[in-house]
Image (cartoon, rainbow, N blue to C red; front, side, top):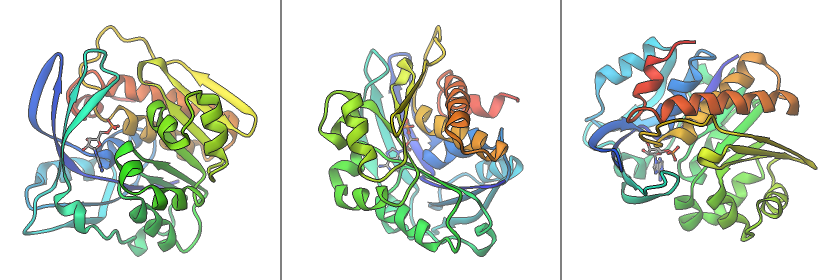
Length: 286
Ligand code: AMP
């Protein structure tokens, strides 16, 4: 059972209390791909890169079962660049730079060869692009999961609200849930957000785990307590890759199986944070 994954492929510059790196491959679709392919293949990638994106990274993705027909390479432009700095608690960060570059002109196309995919992971990009991918699917996928971030809530809230009516599962963190719902209590926030369209809502709380809401049901899963968190970048996308990868592998989208998928996503994310960028996800084995 295959997964389509839409998202950014990027260069990141990251500063944490433990170290600094000026340029490392990142982006939401990179983390989703490296996490999900441990569980299910192929992953049909839809993204865009510039002329600077390393050919070796593309080869590595291919080797792991990532299909790249839906990844556009723009010859005369640079890849998306993001830079962030983490606070001492590692749960909060400041975005220092968002250079959209190629992402500014991104017009995702779903190739014919992707049309049989039953799971759709809409990673963190402009909400109109997430909507465009849903609209290009000839048959509605069995499950549509959407991840987003405060950047899009601040710049494209109306489009985001539209796409929320078209999906099954929304994945956001606690501060994004509060921003979206204008409620401080996460239980009240969840009620409001479930009223906006998604049938399931996952609220990620970093080192404090994740909550799953559906109708009147709530499930809470703790995060694995780690001795050291080196770099949390991509933990949310890795969680998403593990979550959808497990559901696609087991072909079961029941609430009960989503609980297990949350545990799988949390376990994957616990590896991601151990090293800079997606490095640790490339090292681990099943
Ligand atoms: P996460 O830590 O899970 O929130 O994801 C971090 C990744 O998201 C980084 O690798 C960035 O390249 C990517 N990212 C950050 N901002 C954006 C954005 N506005 N659009 C798309 N991708 C982004």
